[in-house]
Structure formats: C-alpha cells, structure tokens
Length: 167
Image 1 (cartoon, one colour):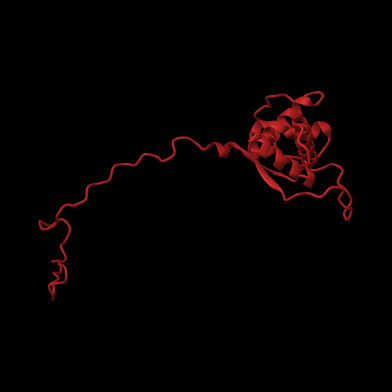
Image 2 (tube, rainbow, N blue to C red):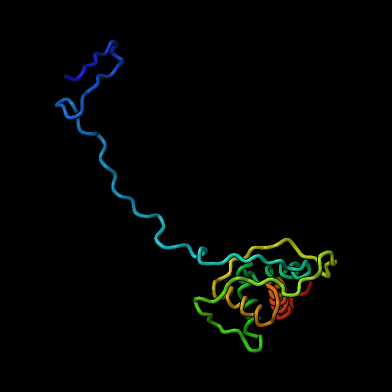
C-alpha cells in the first residue's frame, strides 16, 4: 500500500498518485509544432571570405570610389576581379567548373626577410566573394604567376584607373 502524506498546515499540498481518480488532466493544451523561422539558406553562407591586403594608396583611392559609385566593398571587389580576369590574355573563363581550386596562392617570389616595403599596406579587409569570382581569381594568379595579394591590388588599381578615381 502506498504511503499517504497528510499536510500539517493548510499551505502544504497533498500528494496525488498518478493514475488515481483524483488525478486531473493537464490544464494547458499542447502547443502546435512551430514552423521553421528561416525558409531558405542565407546567401552569405555561399560566399567565401577573402582577406585583402591593399596598399595604402590603393585603399585611399578605393574609399573615394566607394563613396562616388555607391557600391559596397564586396560588389566593387567582384566587379574589379571579374573585369581584370576578362582583360587578361588569354582571358579567364567567365564560368568556372564546380570543382575549380579556390585556394589563393601565395607570392611565388616573396622578398627576403628584413627587406623594407616599397609600399605600405593598409589594415587587411575581409571580403566575401562568390565561388566563381574566387575561382577566377585563383586561375588568374596561376596564369600570371602572382600571389593573391599582388593580383588583388592590380585588379583594384586597374578598376580604379578605369573609373578615373584620383588619389
């Protein structure tokens, strides 16, 4: 026989065994299943973060170009890299294969340690590039035998020259 607890004061509750006649059904109704908050995958997750070490003079020109054109940093990088890849001889294909390499190579001829810099670099910027643009950038690096830093600086500088943005 189960043990019965008797309250000693009116403030205490009585213990009711589950399954007995005194047990009451829950007062709250079960909540309906919630719909997912996000229906589609966010677009930024398909982009690849790319660190850009721009030279200080190019960085200052780029700031002026962003204000003049009204484009964002990501859009400007996309246009500059794609325009640069189209101008190369032979041009880089506009649509890269799905399995294209997207690892940006380092400079194949780095300066010796302790060599003074010719041009100072601004604080690095992280830009999210589309997969195709990143693959074209890597293909251009291999074709021109350059590292990612040099090619990105050349592409941005060529784009700023095309826009006729002064220092």
